[in-house]
Image (cartoon, rainbow, N blue to C red; front, side, top):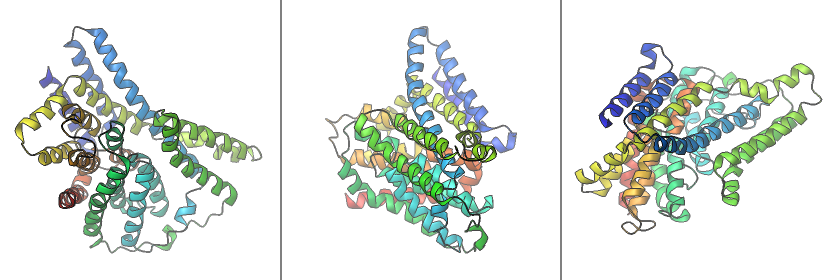
Length: 419
């Protein structure tokens, strides 16, 4: 049965990879892969009550991710509807692709640590659409946004879901993980950033930097600071209430919704429609959300069947060095979701074997957070970028994967030198 599930996953993966060759949206392949894996798993198991419980358990986690994604995307679209991001884009005066690349990457890196890599990717791609109108020019920067968002999220307890898991589980502490992983994460960004910027000499026309249309300044500033401030408030909300992050994002969305309705009271009917949340919802990328659903269903099916846990055991039995095991887990996370891989590692290695803030947990946080950048579907940030900008799998592999790899190994090298 396990072999059948693996074959189904590989075939579905190939369908996603060759999306542009077969001219079928990757979301369809993802949904089919997830449902078929669970169907075969159910057929091979006589305890259907157990299967239902497992599926409901995973659906709870998946729904939390999807609600967070939908909430964050709607908030970003709503701020963009009021042209709130002009506050940032109007202050970016870069005239070359190289300088814009550095500015965007550094902002993404630090913003990802304060928010999270998924939300930051959505925000930064929205900004890039305003700065660069030609998609071909944006793609390289979008690739670097994925690398920067994952690198910035790795050293922060709230920047990446796997780091958050280790933080909540007691494997790492806040100040220690920031202190130990900041430099490796920064190197993980700087190495590919330098490599890419060497031959990037294209100039940006001034008209692509400045938006000359005048909008209501008060509304623009109000929605921008409410939106960005609300996103920054989500981790605080989680800490205070101990509720999942999607509850915080839904609360922030409700606040912006109310404010947008109040701002639209005195507008003409046409203006009221243009600046309403309904207009923002129309721009929501539902195929991307369904792609997330399919991928997470597929991975949860492999996890329930014990395939991921078996893979973790095989790694331990095959490689004696814990450094090699963690490095391979990071690379494996570019193919399979890093959440179940880290969950399996947490189950295999207890705190009695590796106490809090042990090098093993710190390196695991780094590798699981940054290894997913090696493939476009290896991280939440990459999947979001793939959906928003329709990034081709092979284009990313050709142009960005090697950059992510050299940054990944450079960061590991720095971590080993420090420790």
